[in-house]
Image 1 (cartoon, chains in turn red, brown):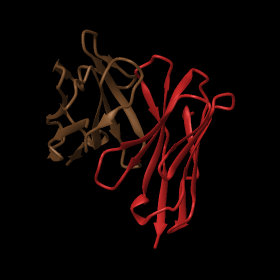
Image 2 (tube, chains in turn purple, blue):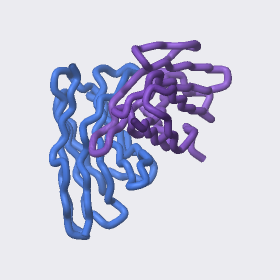
Image 3 (cartoon, one colour):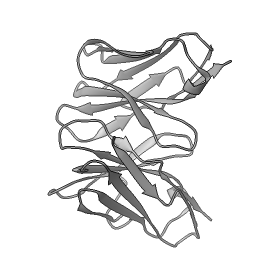
Image 4 (cartoon, chains in turn purple, yellow):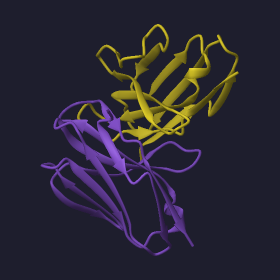
Length: 111
Length: 116
């Protein structure tokens, strides 16, 4: 069973809309979470890290973490066609070096 | 900024042959480097984690005998896929972090391996 599960598998939103991506961990040792974005033909690039409960906002991107439920989400407001990509949730144990990735959500933003 | 370059971007090798890929950190010191393989289905598998001054730790299903890694200094790492077969195909990604605490991994664009 995957330790980091993402939903939905794919998501389509219109340009200017809100995209919401979800991630749930099955391992309570995970304390550090990241969202990565991967465009076709490129490696994944870190969008945001979130280590504390609550919201973290960076521009159009807001991440939310609830450690009690091991749930982290990413919300993209005013979505742009350039946001179309694969989005991965990643998690790591406290002080650990191993980062585990989810299976990804494919986001398509249509003009 | 933190940049990671991987070379080559793409490589094709015959079944049973070997190929080496390189990873260069630019603008920061990579105290730890993680090698991943991304399958054609886009899932990530951690191959091994290499931390300066520590032994390289390989994940289950991956061995030093098959995927030898070198991490000679704080800016360079290389990995070889020995005796490659069809199941070894995929995008090999190098992720480097700046220090040994839990911090963001910076990835290169990967080396795409095709095995004929």
